[in-house]
Image (cartoon, rainbow, N blue to C red; front, side, top):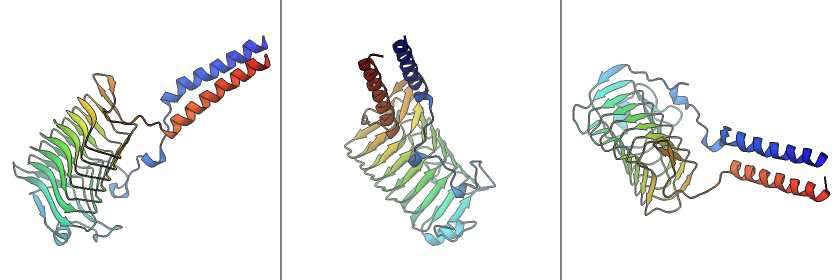
Length: 286
């Protein structure tokens, strides 16, 4: 009788673990969604004025358009709160040849070829903007490095949401991309980039990497994309814990390696120990 009671306890324990584990919210300390200090502790858009298109060709122009800041890491230049209708122009915001620290935030950018067009730019932060209905890409970066794209809403752009070309060591985190036709986020010859915690819905391909290596693609989700993640001619990318669905069915990345998270490994190990313990009890004759 005692033997059957112990067996029942073991089976119940295993059952509870199997039920509760998939629904637990285990937070990876490397992927926590934190509110950056430049967001003033919230993600609310703060639009203040309309503007003509902005052209920045050097660090001095950055200072000219900034409403505050000194261009260093602790006090970056701030350009914020603008509504820019490109009226069919090449861009709403153009930034070239800068390495001062800056933040472009809380803007509405639409009706151009590119919402934001950047070349040879580093140390920029593009945050909490609405970038939509542009004829090619919402954001296009070429020859750029050490930039961050965080908390933006990018949608209804004809060709794609975000494009990186020959751009390395950038971060794309916690953005929402919706119905940008061909691609949500695309990389061409771009290495060591981090793409984390983004939501991408209704694209031909949510994330595409072409000849782009040593990047991190983690914890991105999306619905109704024809393809989740595609790699072409790539190597050494870390692609884990992404989830994309099509018509309600899970569609994993075509090229994602089947790597287990640390929490999943611990979970599997616990199950094995419980099974071994149950066998041990049988062997003792309980």
